[in-house]
Length: 240
Image (cartoon, rainbow, N blue to C red; front, side, top):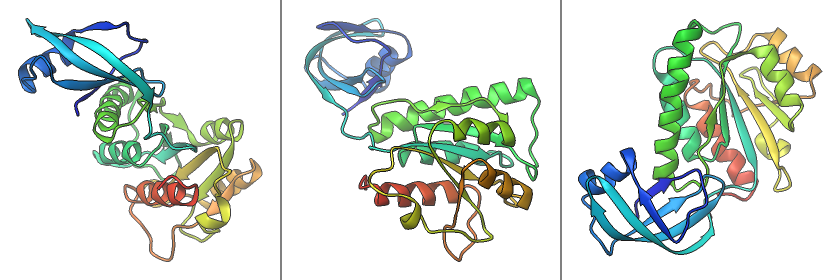
């Protein structure tokens, strides 16, 4: 069923305009009587029926509402070492699909891509759109937010204030099953760019209360690692 995000609690009748209205009317060619879902972006789904469509707008009637079932019990923020080229596009998409609530691009010692402030702002805007589309496709109850590009030390200090931390290191560490349980509620995971983390960065994570994790004996690409980590975390917390 088509799904659209709104940023308010809807009344009994809602007029959907703009890009979403045009998408319903012109791209999907939906008709009166067909159903769609509006999500308030904070975890509630509203089941709706189209009353009328005209001039690229759709008027829908709210039939009932319920809590979104797709949101996991654990809030995972992905702190991703900024990769080269367009790899971050895929990372954002797949991280949203596998349950991340926030993705933060991080500038680490071994990052090759180093955009200036203007270029970074454009990238973040694009990644936010990718996040929204992935949230629609995967039935999420929120639109995971893309944080501003930040340096490694600031990211680690921020994460230390908000819950548990796992830094995944190709040099070895504890397994996810040892670090995560169904009781885990707020978790930050750090994924290195191409080339991984320097030892000094690993040490800084430990100094800030972080734990060092492993994703197994195989070394994963930077765009593969967050997906593997999230899938394993969701499994260990009972969300998969």
